[in-house]
Amino acid sequence: MSFSWKLFSRTLRLPLHRRRALKRLAEFHSRSRTLEEIVWWALNFGGKGFMAVSSMQIPFEITQLAKVVYDLKPKISLEIGTAHGGTCFIWSQLTSEEVIACDINDMSHQKSLYEKFPPASSACKVRLYSGDSHEPGFNSGIQRALNGRQVDFLFIDGDHTVEGVTADYEEYREFVRPGGVIAFHDIVDRQSIASNQVGQFWQRLKKVADVEEFVENQFQTGYGIGILRVPSDGAPTTL
Ligand SMILES: C[S@@+](CC[C@H](N)C(=O)[O-])C[C@H]1O[C@@H](n2cnc3c(N)ncnc32)[C@H](O)[C@@H]1O
Image 1: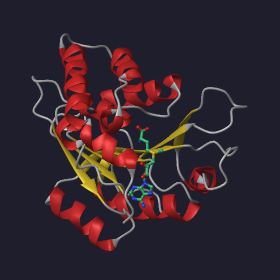
Image 2: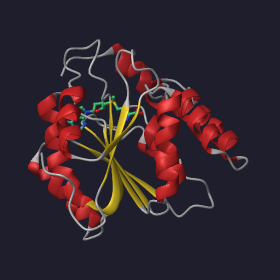
Image 3: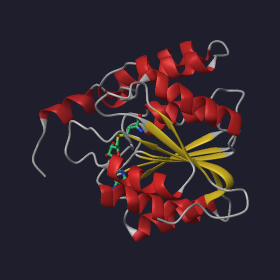
Image 4: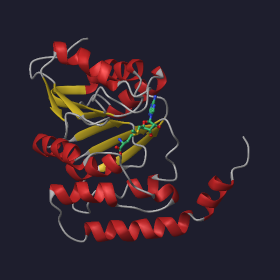
């Protein structure tokens, strides 16, 4: 592996960045927050290096999804694609027992911050899993972590190729309980990046399942959130 100054500098400054991030988190936790405030903080937390918390979401769309998750009152939430922790931050305020956050990138530096996301009054634990969601060993690791329990909410925001999002849906939907919710990000067909192909998957899913869409503007490029409610009497729809 070649030497990277950026990585070296980030690692060197980690203790300072962590102290500032924890101060910011304490400010967030200093009083109870509305759903709108939780979303605002997730998108504007700020910070530097490994301790930067952010999310590429349209406030209207992610707030609509946060309302669905709030109403669902999840005990366990599973996220595929955590990146800089923004959406993980939201789920950790709304989930009562466990948020399982997965990303192909190593998240060991972020662990000490993300684990502190839930408020002190909450019993919620944030657990980070780094690895490729498509690896059978990764999937069975999540299964082991669940230890027979089911997930109430699954957020799929990882590999955005049509094959990738389809595989995540096919391979992780079995973990979601009847009555649970599966949400997808970037469902809008028009995307500025060619490998963002969630829209193609979404068009197929829409034909066979009862879905809801949160899209701020029908002419927008990119973004858009879609949700699928798992029928209370059975497994989620097969494509
Ligand atoms: C759009 S970002 C997630 C953003 C995050 N959900 C938010 O809004 O705060 C997508 C993330 O998925 C991760 N990813 C891509 N392919 C993956 C895979 N096969 N397994 C796990 N994570 C993956 C990327 O590393 C990236 O951090």
